[in-house]
Image 1: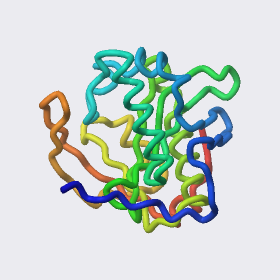
Image 2: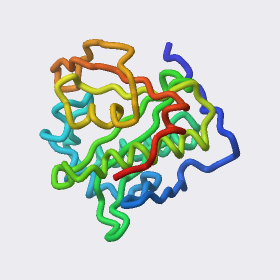
Image 3: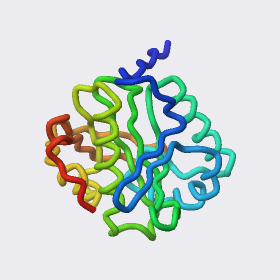
Length: 197
């Protein structure tokens, strides 16, 4: 029997399917069908090398992921954002706060399309997501799991003072193994962190 997911403890009543957050260089917007083609195109083998999911085989698989994400937002146990360039509204990637495993210690996740790598837009998106979560959700701390070899992604929680508190082997949907380190990001770290691109 599948364990029932817990809802986030939200500070105010909010529709998680309609969130829009402005940063210095990015917008975060709740995921919707509108972005299906961009997600399908950019979520490639190369992008998922250090991730549990594998690329969608068809656009219908991408739509199923979006609809599942929207359901999770309606049931208030996760929020999935698309990341957009603030000046052009170009699609950059996706990030989210996942509370399925434990709503008191939600998990952060992010992926950025290949052409935006090195721009530090991912760092800004996660900083912004953490600040939004701190204002919106009552939680103990956030987690950020990442493969040990994924140095650019590891720099994101490290830029906030995140500390490694768990290490584990995780199987991907492609049948490969990730050598994960899990960072803990406390509310105090988010409060003291400046949003720098």
